[in-house]
Image (cartoon, rainbow, N blue to C red; front, side, top):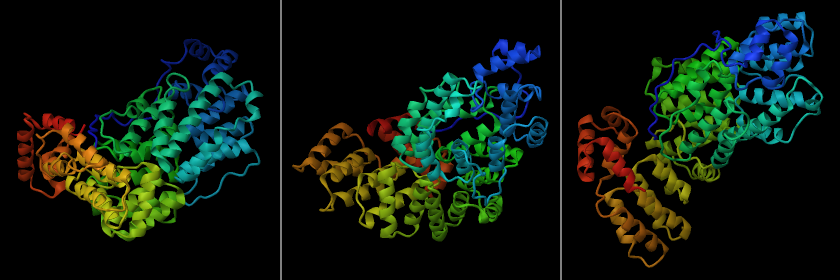
Length: 559
């Protein structure tokens, strides 16, 4: 695990007044002077009638909500969009009654947000651009990320003709935002339902698109960093999203909910309380929006945070969550079923969760369910399916699967006959040196394994960092083939001073992740006294004065 300790801000009240401090002064002056024609002109430079989130966030939304009724149809569109994003359903009804306008888009999005958990249809429309607008809202609401990914692949090629015919749309801002929006949507779709390497590349690109201050740039930055963790990298970084959404210029309540749910699975990879923080805030938003599907998702992640932290039975709301999700669509039901499997170590629950994940296209949940299934009961068919997914998607750190479970799954794949770099990397990322060494040796001892896979096994062995691994490398270095040459290079680089035992490496690695001795003891089923002894031995062997320095020394031996 990466060291992911971060002090998180207090959960914000996203409906509280924020003032207009960051808005353009000419817009604020015109608004305060009730110069509505001038307000309309100024709004067109900062707000898009088709896209309401932007660099000014809630400050702009709150100004728009105070625009006069009946003055201008453009104002009605702006205000209606802001009301939807804030869940102001009574005000929206009154506004539409007072000033008739073409309400298809507004009412369609409202109906999606407030739909029940078993909802499975789109608002009726004959317009292609309405359908493309409704689809991402509906797929997010039912957490069907496979269909969302396909939508993201289509939307980047669609620009409606009406875009050029409406004078309330600032074309330059809209086109710049669309490049950011479409690229990041592709990244989100790949992160949840496709390939992490593609998601990472697209998220990095997104950070250079759009206008300065766009909240989607912040989302792109955090998504890129979190995807790296999912691919098995170990690095420190602080999330930018929590602070950003708390600012007066942060996104609308609906926008914040979307951002948090895009990140939520990846937040489960962190050791801090970012998952619980995000889930609690998302739940508050969903309750205020009167959005049953949004609320079910938020509660699912809040319970996931509780279960992951070791709470069981009546200390969680798992039983109520499973009951509420019973009639929900597959994407919404998958995580609650998975959590019941996590709490009970139930193979059948994980099998059902994997089936639901496939139906919804939620690849991360497929991977995690299969990891658990293999750790509980290894079966060749399941091992082969997981191996394929690991190869295709680049997942190396399964979500809500403790390291020992991931290590057992890697060993189970090897025992059932699967071979490949992705299995080796899954074992290495799990941080269980003894298991990783066993997986490596099974690759090296198998005559049918390709030379590429054998070389990959030696590479992984060089990263294990134990005395046993060093000794094996030394023996392999005597061979006169590619494996021997690779082992010789690694042996000379790691040096003879490495002599940590497998248990010492495990304990020190967990200490480097920020766990206390007691937490390490609980994770490894040891006593705190034994953990302290292993840490002391590791420090002595590495010549380190404290656990932090020892962790740095261990990391250097793996480079």
